[in-house]
Length: 379
Ligand SMILES: [Zn+2]
Image (cartoon, rainbow, N blue to C red; front, top):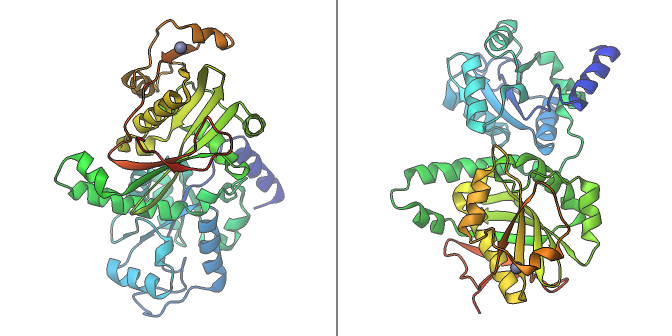
């Protein structure tokens, strides 16, 4: 790449025209390792290529395989090389590579424009490029340059980016068990040992909180984007709460999956934002959060008012609020809040709630500043 091309590529990534790569699909023979496995049982991976794989993984970029080989044979070699754990959803067989890349993207729920493919053979790259023009293709010679390319260089590497692959791997195991489960869904949830942790956000979590306000359009109650600077200013006030929600189960962490912004007035708590990740809708996370909040407000003796702005995608969130008892009733507490145009203000006079039977909830006491997290219990 010339310097001019490199600048153009950097600009394209910065403006979002060329989104960051979320998954790189590797060819094996003469690309990941030297030589072909059918001719040499003991193909080797250079230290430089190994470092590329490890570093991409640390940046939160997933990696997969599309290779023309016998699956068990090739996978055994990747295991022997100590590299198998770095690859998700490998497609090793004799089909078309464009089909493999598409299947991997579909399974991950990634757009093809966030997928990349590396292969030494021009014919394979041409086949993928023909059927999937959005997929970015690289030659084997480019492998050692990948770490320097803007599309493989996220501006910030968050804590959960570093654990992203493990989260996906846990997700695949969880999904497989769920599909095999015969009984009612709620019973399956109980087998997971789900723990929801609601915590006051720490400085290093703000980037992820901002991401959640941006990306969770289906489950975002007000559609408002909160930049990191705004969130940071909320951390230092007595009145505001920036809460991060994460979920774990026996398969591993789901990572941060929700955010709640609350401004506490004397008689009413104002929920300015509630957003949860679409990935965990099936765990009933939104309903559990609202029940916990309702119980907390009841114990504190305050009413709740939640902002809701209807978008074409967040109807599920309105349903969750209405189901939790929020409504349009008149109440004197409404006058405590500054007026806001175009925002629906859903009101609730809270009552004590039972903790859920499907998960354990760890949360701080919202009425007490600096309180430690404790298990939500009835007494
Ligand atoms: Zn009220």
